[in-house]
Length: 158
Image (cartoon, rainbow, N blue to C red; front, side, top):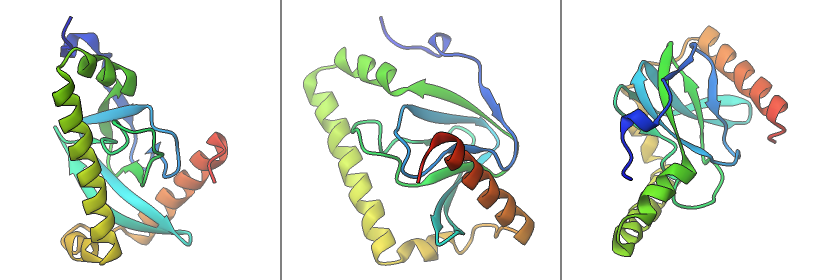
């Protein structure tokens, strides 16, 4: 049986500032943005470093879908947002129904994307990419950082 949107639950709401997942956390879901906006961030020395912002119809959490690596960044709702959560196991089940070469292509694309993201960060090219993003106010930065710290504490993430 193929997957369709009818197989998934209703969208889940996240208020502005709510953490969706944190860097270092085990990955269990891929998220599709139904409505709103999500900021992908790194927390470096207790400072929020924006990487990118994704909006409607975009998705997050894809880098760890095809491996068992932990989240490489954190995701925070940068405005009131609705997301569809798709279990990693559901994606893997759909891929089992595909020929092996499809799964191999997906794994290769995921590995290449992760390498590209790492390379961009290493050479600080992401700084240029985020230059056009709306900057966070001091209030937003503090809200996001507090939310991230509380989330990590609840989940036992260092």
